[in-house]
Image 1 (cartoon, rainbow, N blue to C red):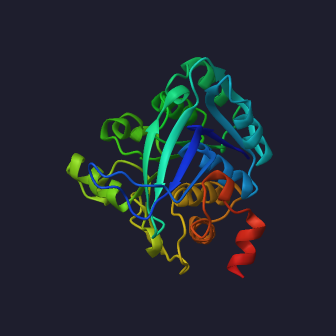
Image 2: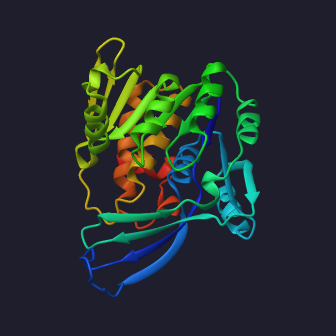
Length: 290
């Protein structure tokens, strides 16, 4: 079994601030660092660090070979990451004294991929493999359709939230993942309750309160809690959770087992500064859980 991920690849610029700037305010950053990120990359790295075989489908700028090397060092297969003349996507991440963050994205090469390259990558997948998707690339709908045709599991993160993007892929999604704000936005936009969304399964992440899963086919609901930790940086916590859920399901865990494992991983992640580089390994998560 394997996980394929049509996902963004970003170079993250982190700025540690005493507080988020108000309109017109200029702040001195306490610290600055550069790392590997993007929702897609974070999820691929999380799944790989959890022990899954992961193939990332994406694009970077030709000048940033170090990005591919870093992904590979974390165990992600980058065979299907294209080198384009566009700049690599990047993000400006401000982190305040409480560990909360605000993010500004420049998509770059992430939204310049061609459909045939994506379909060629998915063509190598097998029935029962998993496809991860988010809203930081183009052509999610093409990838979802191809994956479902191959009877893959499709896990889709509706983030950054875009109701039109959700509508385009929803019919091919196996598990729709949202945080509580995104869930409220989607149900409001579609005028339906969560249990009426036309997807087989829904996961709503609840931050420090854990996560909830429901089957819209049977009505079954599962809730998992999150360990209590002191957050340092909440960036990539949701991506860590999703990557670990995907890896757990890929390993044959039940949805409850996968979510409990993922909650431990996400909790450990928020005690560390950074994104992909800071995501814990399975051994670290298991030690933390113990």
